[in-house]
Image 1 (tube, one colour):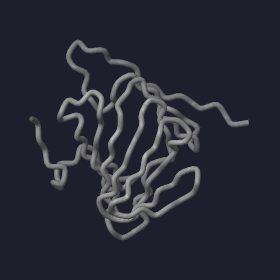
Image 2 (image 1 turned 90 degrees about the vertical axis):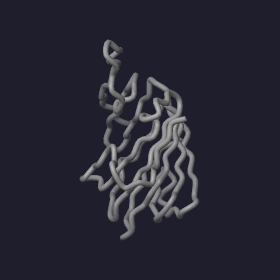
Image 3 (image 1 turned 60 degrees about the vertical axis):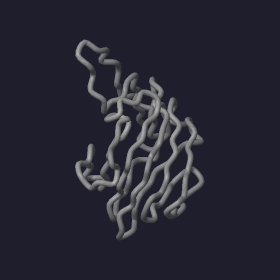
Image 4 (image 1 turned 30 degrees about the horizontal axis):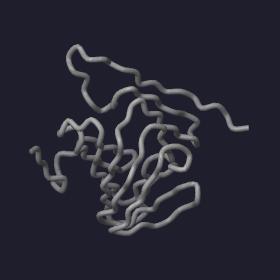
Length: 156
């Protein structure tokens, strides 16, 4: 059995000052190959990430604390602790979380980790293709894989 406590305040695996967001990954320390999970903390005023979708990954989010704003193609909605939201792959899974409040937001993110995965950011006109997880170190002598950025074709 492998164990960690996701509620500890330190250390965070990823800290993004611009997006005012911190992430603690669970799958990496356990060596998980199919299931991904993380704790995401959106600090007060966090704009969150960009509206995006995956081709290759499903995602589910569990709101632990705070009241984040969820943006999808249907508009914006305020979520509360206990809410669970699911996003399939493709355009129906477009989403983004932000935190316009004065309190931190904590979210557990669960996903499948199929590769290759394409993450598309339609508003920015870019997509990333990855044949391996970008945050995972490549083992000695292992395949470096492909992680590449592409411009999306303009909508007509």
